[in-house]
Image (cartoon, rainbow, N blue to C red; front, side, top):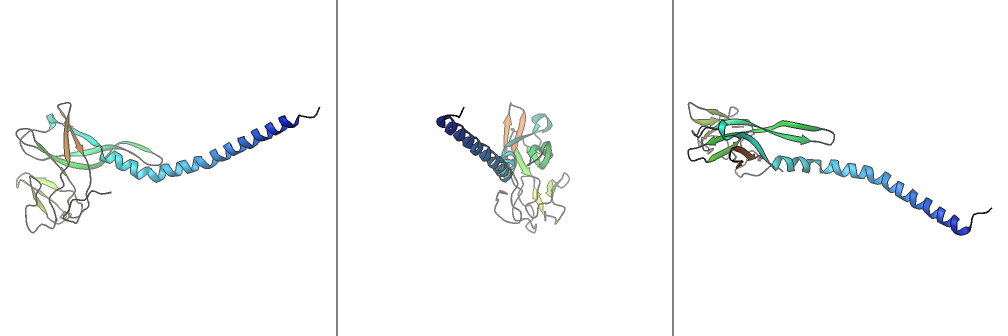
Length: 180
Ligand code: FES
């Protein structure tokens, strides 16, 4: 028995629709993956800009002495997810009354990590000898650093956790410009 013309047309239409859908999915899947890879640096940046839990108040006496803490965060690239990897470090300084200063350890001259020298009560960059006072300002007018240490925003959460909005800034210039 011959199929009715109407049934034949309907089957033909369904076959064509299915072929278009499969073809579209085959094209869109790699495009979607490409867009995800393209946007990946933005995703990493978003993670880096979030406040990060650095320590607790118990580890930060209110004696005004700067103490260094690593900054750890989860990172994701196109293929892997890394948990709690170092993305930088900060000096935290808590003074009587509870105020906390946070400085990125990267020297604004060229990015070397500064050290705190307890005896001299200042920060010293080992690369070209810039010095900074405990409040982060340039200590010596001959220091090559064009600006003081980069300050960061601090939040206290749950009455004891110290969170820092960690960010890097462009070195070698007087203005504090976030790294894009
Ligand atoms: S990198 Fe710090 S003084 Fe040059």
